[in-house]
Image 1 (tube, one colour):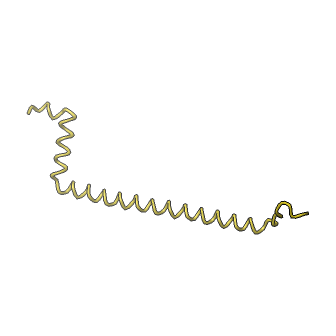
Image 2 (cartoon, rainbow, N blue to C red):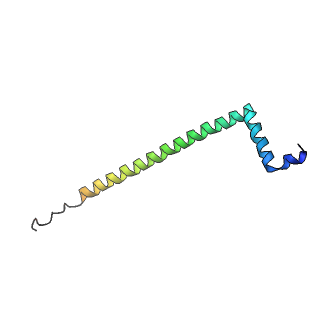
Image 3 (cartoon, one colour):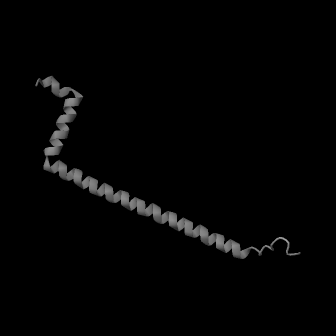
Length: 80
C-alpha cells in the first residue's frame, strides 16, 4: 500500500474501526458507554412514565373534586 492510500476516507475509517476492535482499552470504553447509555435511557423512561402517571392521577383528582362541587344535574323529564 502506498502512503497516499491512508489519506483516503474509506481506508482511514476501516483502519480506525479495526484498531478499535482489537484494542482492549477501546472495547472497554465502548462497552461502558453502552452500559451507561442503556441505563440512562431506562432511567429517562421511568421518569417520563412516573410523570405521566402523576399528571393523570392529578387530572383525575381534579375532575372528581370539580364534580363534587358542582350541583347535581337533574335528569331530563324529572320535572322542575
